[in-house]
Structure formats: C-alpha cells, structure tokens
Length: 486
Image (cartoon, rainbow, N blue to C red; front, side, top):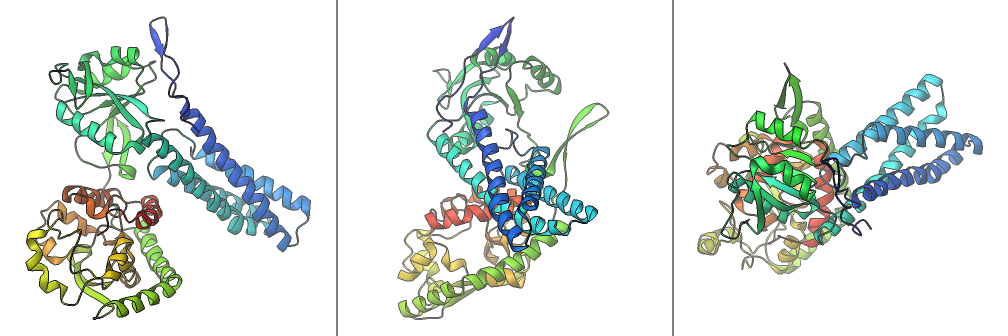
C-alpha cells in the first residue's frame, strides 16, 4: 500500500539540499487520517442513527447532532496531534494521543450539552463517542500491522546515518535489525577515526567518514535520520554545531541519552536559564493513575472470570481425566515490596514434579536464575497444550481480583530467585507482578535473562495506562501464536 516508492530524489539548490521525501510517509499519514474520519462517520451514522431512533428524535435533529459530534471529534483529534508522523506506526503514544483526543471530545460535548440544556446529547456522549473509539483503535492497529509487515520485508524504512563509538554503534545496528517495525535502516556510520574493519565496515555497515564530516555526508547521501550515540567526541558545543549544520537538510537528529534507559512519559525537555535540560521525573508508584490501574484490574479480572467460566470448567475436567493429582497448582511467589503470596495456576505437571527438579538441574535451558526445559518430562499431555497457549495462567485472575497481582506487570518471581537479585533487579518488586507484561509479548521463555530483566525494569520505570493497553492487546496475539512458550 505504501511500499511502492522508497524515496524521492535529492535536489540541490544553491548549495542547500532538499531532503529525500519518503513517499510512503505522507501516504501512510493520509491512510490514518482517512481511517479516523471513516470510523467517525460510520459510528455517527450507524450508532448515532440507532440512538436517535431509540430516543424518538427527528431525522434533522439526528443529522445535526451527528454533524456536531463528528466535527468536535475530528477537531479534538487534530488538536491532540494524533496524526503527527513522529508517533505514527510505533509505541504506545499513538494510541495514547488517540484516547486523549476522544476523551477531550467527549468532555467538550458533555459540557456543551449541560451549558445549552440539550438533554438529547447524553446518548451521543455515552454511546456514540465510545463507539467511535471501538472502531478507531482496531483500525489504527490494523494499519500499524500492515506497516510493520511492509517493514519486515524491507520497505517503508527510513535511511539512517549513525555516528558514535564502535561499541554503541554496534548496539544500535543490532537493535534496528532485530526490531524492523521501528522503521530504521542504518545505511552508514561515522566514527571518530573514520575506520571500521579492514574492509571499512562496522557489522556490515560501511564507515563513510569521521564524526566532523556528518553534515556533508547527510547532504550527499540524503539520510532521513542522524542517530548520535555515545562517544567522547561529543560535547554540547559540537552537538549544537551539528544541529545547525543539519538545518535545511531535512534530516532529523536523534541523540541517544547515555544516563539511563528511560523513555515515555517520564522524559521532559525544558529550558532553564537558556539551557536545554532533559528532566527525568520519578516513576509513578502511587497516585491517581495507580488507583485507576487497581480499579481496572479488579473489574477487568472479575469480568474475565465470568466470561471464561466455561473454559475454566472444561480445563478442570481435562486435567482430571489426563493425570492424577489436583486441578490447581499453588506456589509461593514474591510480589510488590517483596511480600510473598500464593499464586494459583492450572496444574500442568505430574504429581511431585518439584521433587524431580534437582535431578533435572543439569538440563536447565532457562536464562539466569530461571529453570526452563523445552521438553520437560514432568509436563503432562494436557499440560503441554495449556502451557503453549498460556491457558495455565488463567487462574491468576483470582490473584488479580484479590489484589496480589495486576493484569500487566513484571513476571512474578520465586523466593529463591529474588534471593539472588542485585539492587538493580530488585526494582522489579516496586510494582505488582502481572499476568502478562512486556516479557510475555516479547518472546517469553526465548528471552535471555538480561533481556527479560531489561524489559521488566523498563516497564517499572516507564509505566503508563496506554502502555498497559498496548501490552494487553499484544498478549492475545502472543498467546495465539504460542511463540516462546514451554
């Protein structure tokens, strides 16, 4: 859809270059805008028409309220910059802005109805606008998946010139290759000495020059992103001069912070006394957002337990028929602030499986302090199916309802695991463990120990309601695929 043309030509006018315009970017943005407009109009026409008919409104009145609703919603989305290219196609911020825009429209319509005494506005506030959300969010997700599929095939990627030390450049190259959905393709690098290996390459990427030659290479090569990684060469003055030199080239300069791996809502750029400062706010472990999360956990787990009751009963019968032993497996885990609790899961192993652990210790395929085996002889036939699709985790919804766990959070560790934690890893215990989390949607048991810890710590540091929503959505796909589950 958008992968037909990679870039336009690079033009030079009076010594200043006009950047290559990625032809797919405006096309993708237009697709997103069209999707939002279509979802709004369909929801207003179908749901609004039904609501109006149920309330006994006349046709002209329904059309008038529908037009007002559509205009307010689209204006609110525009004001919340939901169509900005920076957020389209990746991260939770795209969905966060969409949610904030729809909420703002809902509030505006509600206040207008109260101020003008329009009682017939209530169904539009409580039914029609939420219906727009039900249409718009899945449509956005579908467009994103189409974009990611194109990127996995080598299309819709932004050419990147990376500059820094060889070590940090290798890390960036590795990450962009492993995460093609981000949309970056490192085409060239610059280093302090301008050399890579004997072939003038760094991990297969050509080294085109030294760090003080970046601007010239950008104008000649038409790179879309200039990624700056850590190197002793970079000083505030040199970064400022590079930013000035890149003006007019159209390249976006991206500087990787070297202090810590923090992103999302905790980072704020402000200016104090004429100096740009990157403010890192403290992670939110309490407050209104946490209360909202707890309420959502309790209500969400209760609804899921009611909805999945037939499935839970069927699994109980299957376990009883397949092997001897109880239906549930209970185990001590460590929760928020190091408090122990009893986790509940469906039994997937033979009876007395824990006593066989010492015999299998030498066959451990798990990462770090975890014990995992791809072909664990203790797992029953039904247990293998339950594990593959994470059905054995469903009883943890009782833990969520009871308050010891959350729907989304770090993986709940064993007491013997936490005894081996260092001070940094213990930060996983600052929040409630989750039934699912970044580890669940990023490979599960296939992850290395360091990668699993990094993902959990990232969640602790950068938690937000929008991130929770994205993780829950991705969990369904990860569970259905069964990838990394054993």
